[in-house]
Every structure is written in C-alpha cells, then in structure tokens.
Amino acid sequence: MILKKLIVPALFAAAAILHAQTLTAQEKISSDELFVQARNAAFQQKNYPKAITLCQQALAGSPGYTDIRVFLGRLYFWSDKEDSARITLDQALRENPSHEDAAIAAASIAYFTNRYKDGLAYAETGLLHHPKSSDLMLQKAKLLTATREYKYAARLTDSLLVIDPKNTDARALAGRIRDFSASNKIGISYDYTHFGKQFDDPWHLTSLDYSRLTKYGSVIGRVNYTNRFKTNGVQFEADAYPTIAKNFYAYVNFGYSPDDAVFPKYRGGFSLYANLPKSFEADLGFRYLNFGNDTWIYTGSIGKYYKSFWFNLRAYVTPDDDRISHSYSFTTRYYLGGADDFLHASVGYGISPDDRTLAIQLNNNYKLLTHRISGGYRFTHKKLNVFLINLGYSRVEYLPKTKDNQITAGIGYQRRF
Image (cartoon, rainbow, N blue to C red):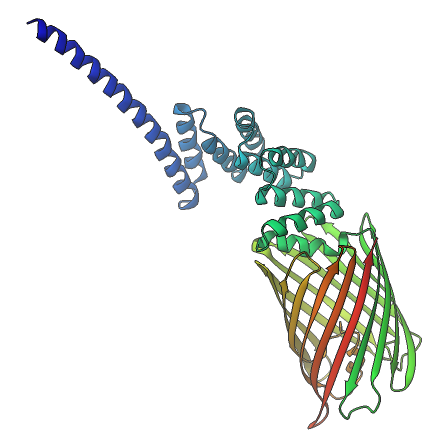
C-alpha cells in the first residue's frame, strides 16, 4: 500500500514532465511547420496574404524566431507595404543585431525604396558582424553606386571578387561601374592594319584620350590621328556616359574631322543601356556617319554576366534605298580579376561603325562582306595602370568575288589618377 502511494504520484509526475516536453516540442515543430507553409504559400502559390498570416501565427508562438520575422519583412515589401517591412526588419535587428539575413534584407529594401543612407547604415552594421559576407558587400556596393560613389564601389567589388571570383552579380556591377571608378583617366593606343592585296601600304591609327568623372557621368575627349591611303588625317571626338536612373545610363558620341578622305567628316551615336534582372543588360541606339552623304545605322545588343564570363551579342542594321545591310558580332570576356583584368574574343560578320580602325571601309558603294575574328588581353598593374593588347583577322570581299586578308594589331595604355 505504501509502495502504491509512492509509485502513483511518481508516475503522474513523470507523465506531466513528458507531456510538458511533448507540448514544447509540438510548439517548436508547429512554428517550423508554419514557416514551411508560409514559404510554400509565397513561392509556390504566390499568395502573399496567406504567407503573411502564417508568419504572424508562427511569431505568436515563437516571437524570437528571427528567420520568420525577416521573411515576414520581405513579404510585406513584396506586398507593397514598405512601412511594415521596415518596422518588422528593424525589430528583427533590435532583437538579433548580428543576424546576417536581417541586415541583408533591410539594406536591400532600403536600396529599392531609394533610402540609400539608411541602406548603407544597415550594410555597414551587418559587415561589422560579418566582414566577409558576399551579400552584404554586394549590397553596399550597389548602394554606393546609387549614390555615385563609384570609386568606393569599385574598390568594394574588387575586394568581393577576390573573395568570390565567380560572383555573377558582383561581376556585372563591376563591369557597369568600371568607367566611373576613377576621377581622371588618360590613355593612348596604337593600331596597325596590314592588307594582303587591297592596299599596298598599311594603315596606322593613334588615339589619345582624357576622361573626367562628373556628377552627371563620365565625359571623354579624344583625338585620333591616322595615316591611310598615304594620307594623314585628324579626328576630334567627345563621348559621354550620363546616368539617367538607377538602372539606366546612356552613351553619347560626336566626332568631327576636317580630313574626310581618311575619316568620316561627322560621326555620332547614341545608345540607352538598361541593367536587367539576373545580370542581363541590353541597349538600343543608333550610329551616324557622314562621308559626304548621311549614313544611319541602328544597333542593339543583349549581354549576360555569368560567373567569370561576360557574353554579348550585337547587331547593326543599315537601311538604304534598295536593301537593308546588317552586321553582327558576338563577344565574350573571361575575367581574371577585377573589371579591367580579362581575356576577350570576338567573332563577327560585316563592318562595325564602332570599329574606328576599319569603319572608314563603310564608305564604299559595294556592300562589304566581311568575316572577322579577334582577341586580346586587358590587365592592370598596381591598380592605376591599365594595358591593352589586341589582335584581329578579317576576310573582306572588297570587290565582287574578290577577297582580301586583313590583320590588325593594337596596343594601349591607360593611367588613372
């Protein structure tokens, strides 16, 4: 009887403890399961209101579950509830200041809502806890680019690419800000073109340019000197890359030469570039050449960054009275380091108006059928010095059923300061 009195209470106590543990386990599983259901509702069903309700239910049982609170903040943003997203993520960071994903989400949403100062604060705080976080470094670089602090953004993307050289988004961003990352640049280049039989003498082209970063974008002045057809000539050019919006910038060109025997008398160009999702980019525009008569050429391209590669397909279309001429080029780069360290290769059909070495051949009544291939190497030395080496081969039909071989070699140097 005494033994029964001792065992029964003990069994009840054990059962109570087991029941309490079971309830605790069920509550934990319940929060996790609600989180799984919320993600399924958001990503599979595209039902954000349902996902928000599920997250709120999970947080009611586990208010300290930061991963759920961060996901709820993202859901609010995707549902166009920006204030709720900010309040929710701020609460997550107050409760768990070292949570990496909370800092990433807060910085990202601040970037998309144009709160760049707040976004930089989130990113910098997150980097104090996670100094080698690729996502936080990338987000900070995007914010610096948005505030046109290109020099600091370029340094950050270079550091990120050392840590993660195959980071596609970082590679794309580095490519976009390459021409904006130095306040001043001066460069010189030389191109030599040899012909098998079309011309007895080789062509020479030397270019000197100066680039200045302004608050509107990069502006470049260039002087080209050439010797073609045993004739010397000079051309003056100006390029600009104005920033239009967060994901849009333009290319503008104008050139003049008093020596229209070896250069077009006037040249011009415009393209609008768009930075697209998933590291794609595209542009549409035109080129203008005047050899005594106006020639309008329309162009467009699509590009893609993938890990350490960049791919670009470009087309040129030239309408005239009786036909439409076209040319194409496919270019790829393989990056070895930062934005100025890469190998490149290109194949193409037709003459490109952007090729200052051979564009003069567009001044021909016969439509040149050209196949070309080229490659080169661009690399930096001590970050401020950039060197260029290029080599190209073209097979040109310069008269009906008459073809020639052309070989072009070029070198260049650029100094940043």
